Length: 461
Ligand code: GLY
Ligand code: MN
Ligand code: MN
Image 1 (cartoon, rainbow, N blue to C red):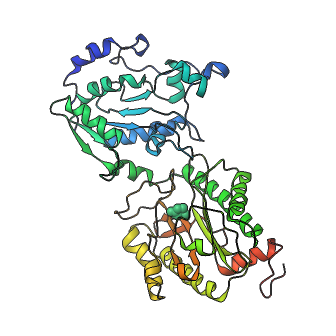
Image 2 (image 1 turned 180 degrees about the horizontal axis):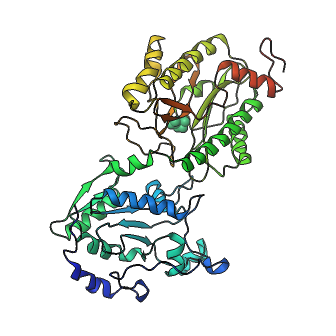
Image 3 (image 1 turned 90 degrees about the horizontal axis):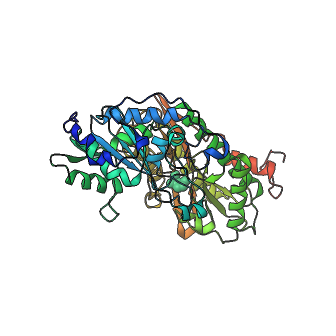
C-alpha cells in the first residue's frame, strides 16, 4: 500500500526547480485540454498511438493497472530499437499505443495527488533527426498526441521516480521475468536503483498483473486478430493452390507472404517456416532453399500481423496434392490429437494438465510417444508467443494455439497442425476453422485450384 504525501515538500525541491516552465505546478489540477492537435507540418514528429484504437483505450488500460498497484509505483520501458518485425515492447505498446517511439518509458504512480501517469521520451538530437526524421519539442501538441498530461524527456526519469517513490512503499516490477542468464530487465534495474536511494522503499514483483490483462482480449482486439487470421488464410490457400514439385521452399514462402500482403497485412507476425520433406521434421526449420519433390509433404507454419496483432497457423499438405497412405496415417493421428485437445478446451481448464495431455494421450496411444516433443499451446495476441498465465486455469476471452505434431526424421516426415482457438465458458471457437485442415478438405481445395493436381476420386476439378 502506498503512503500519501510523506515527503510532499520534495515536490518543491531542486528536482522541480529544474523543470521547464511549461510543465507547470504539479499540485494544480490538470485542466481539460482545450487545444486541438496541430495539423499537417505542425504535427510532424509528434508521437501518436497507432492502430485503430483511440487513446482512451490505452488510458483505460493504464487506469486499470493503477487500480491494482495498491498505491505503489511502476515503470515500463519501451523497446530501445524497433526489431525485425517492427515490434515495440508489447507491454509498453499495450499501455500507450506508441508503436514507433524508441527509448521511451512510462511511470504509473497512483498515489500522486494530481498527475498519476508520466511519459518519458528520448531527447532530441538534431543530427539524428537528419537520419530518422524530425521530432517535435515538448509541448501541448505532444501531450494531446500521446494522451499523457505529463510528458518529459528521459533525463528526468530518475527525478520523477524519486518524487513518486516517496509517496509509495514499493516499486512494482511488472515483468516479464527472465532467466539468470539474460540481462536484468531495465525496469527491474531502475526500480532497484531508485529504491536504493529511498530508505524504506523496496521493490516487489507483480508479473501476473499485465499478463492477466493482456491474455483477455476484448471485441476490438479479437476483430484485429480475426483480420490477421484472414490474411494468413489467404496466404496458406495461395500456397495450396500454387505449390508444385520443383518449386523451392523460398518460392512457396513468397507465394504465402504475397498472399498476406494482398489481403492487407503489412508484416509477418514471425519468420515464416516453409519446410518440405525431411525439413518438416525440424521444429523451427530456419532455411528455405530446398526444392520440393513430388510425393512429399510441405509444412507451412506462418502468420500475418494486423496492426500489431499476431496470428499463427500451421498447415501440412502434399506437394502433389494427394497424401500417400503413410502420410495419411500419421496426419490422421495428429488431427485426432488436435481434435481431442480442442474438445478439452473451455474456461477453467489448464494448458499443460488438460489441453496438452489430451493431445499427448492420442499421440502416445498411436505409438508416437517420442515423436511429439514440444508443448501443444501458447497464447496469441500482440506477440505470437503472447503474455498469459500458463499455470492458472484459463479464462474465457483468451486465445491460444493448439498445435500437436509428429516428427519422424528417419522417414523424412514431419506433420504439425496448428489452429488458434478462442476460449469460451463452455468450449472454444476455432478462429482458423476456415483454413482447410482435414485431408479431404485439403485434397479437394488443391484439386479445385491447383492445375497440377489431379482430383481425388469422385471430385470434378
Ligand atoms: N510459429 C511458431 C509457433 O508455432 O510457436
Ligand atoms: Mn504456435
Ligand atoms: Mn506456428
